[in-house]
Image (cartoon, rainbow, N blue to C red):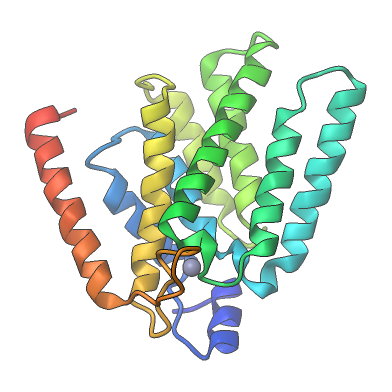
Length: 239
Ligand SMILES: [Zn+2]
């Protein structure tokens, strides 16, 4: 069933678009073998919900992201606090503003850059909050809520956000490192692109180097690659 933004997209594209829910579930499947902790799984779901900010129906949300980032930057600057978080929000807004749908933000280079920027955002938030001497769990819960507000429109599942916050609070966390954060975000982004490869209009996976549309065959290839790495990881590297 299509709903919300996806339905609008389907109408605008004349094309069947995977819904938020499918993107979220597929991102969990792709991430679970590598990162069996709630925080990383949550990051994957966040990553999977980001690429479609490039759609024309999202222009208003992108403007909100831009002005929220700008206000935060100015506010924190005036308060003489680190304002990296605001700058990161501005750069995210600019990337989405300049991309056309299923172009750069759905490409290999695009999802690598976006995962890096979101990783910087998570780390900046962590260090910003750490300076206030909050417990690690409290910091992670705030990051969960912040990213949720950033990546979803209101209609999307407050219950899920609460569950994620509770999960992060109640379960042990293996440590905040680059691998746990960026790996999970990247898999979330990749899962989104793989599902979109199944749509009739495909994805410009090698943007900006080529505007060739990649389709279903590439999705199967990427899934096969993922399966090989996942099996190897679970058998030989392990939890
Ligand atoms: Zn998409």
